[in-house]
Length: 211
Ligand SMILES: C[S@@+](CC[C@H](N)C(=O)[O-])C[C@H]1O[C@@H](n2cnc3c(N)ncnc32)[C@H](O)[C@@H]1O
Image (cartoon, rainbow, N blue to C red; front, side, top):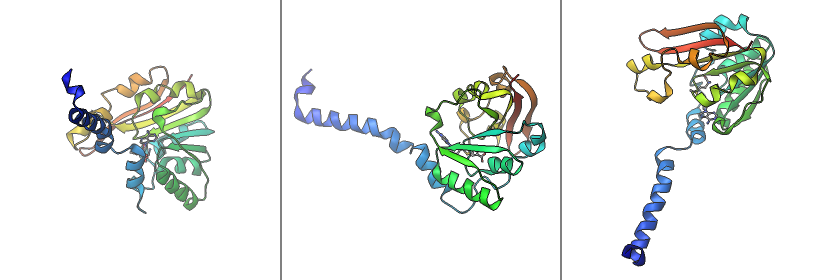
């Protein structure tokens, strides 16, 4: 092919290949930077209070070791620490986790945290009494929850579902299908399940137990 013999064409081709390789990065800044930038404010973007579904059902959860997946600024993990649970929070954003530690201090409790990229992370089997995940969607990780729980352990998961798309512009891929949590966690015993819709927000929540 003649084009590859012409140095000018080779230069153009090289430039195009370079642009193709960097453009996804330019179009979508890495999650870590994106979330660190968002959390770079004194304000707690998701509030300091835990999600109501957790507060309403905390009495059902077995006391012990909690893994808070994508903990963010710590509203849920810190609440569980105040209730006597031993909490480890994971998140890709160190800025979020710094705020979680500040919230813990404000509430006179301590938590452990670890900065990790959950897209490249394997949960330890038979380790946790509770796995909590709110408003973080990674279905292949959800599928590891059952093996990461100790027998009798419980998951608490809540995130937006497809009805939410009626109210805001939101990516379809981050919204759960109808009954999808029931399907993903069908190997567990369902203790509580709800679809919430108040005309502004819509989400699904589940608590389920490993037998
Ligand atoms: C919508 S926030 C929810 C935070 C918290 N669970 C809550 O409900 O307040 C989503 C969180 O996921 C974290 N996150 C996004 N991608 C991640 C990844 N690949 N690994 C770990 N955490 C990630 C973000 O840093 C952010 O804190």
